[in-house]
Length: 127
Image 1 (cartoon, one colour):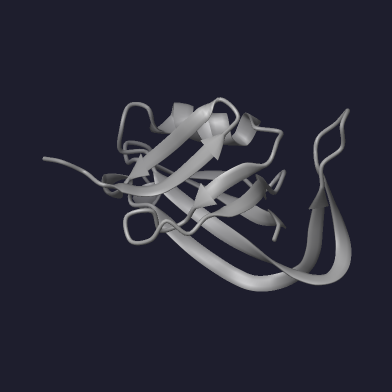
Image 2 (spheres, one colour):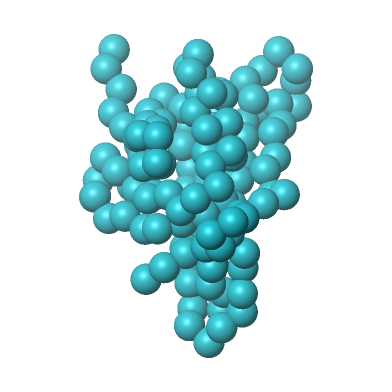
């Protein structure tokens, strides 16, 4: 059975693909008056401004052996990433960073034997 790429990330180290069998869910949240500044010596910081920027909540179910490694690559990325939220339908992309301290892992169906669903938030970092 062949699976299609559902969402894609381009990091400094290369591309990270998540497939449609990983139950990828992307929810675009209402736009926020935030912007991200990339510092030269540290991780990016969030500042409030008048321009509105998009945020997304992404949920990925651990259905492949490399899923958790791919998620960890995104969590550990300190630089801006390119995010393709609906890769199999459109190649629209956004520059984003991971919103720190908002990564959740839960067992699907509330059972320890079930797959792990990881949820994290992304913030558009430039227009």
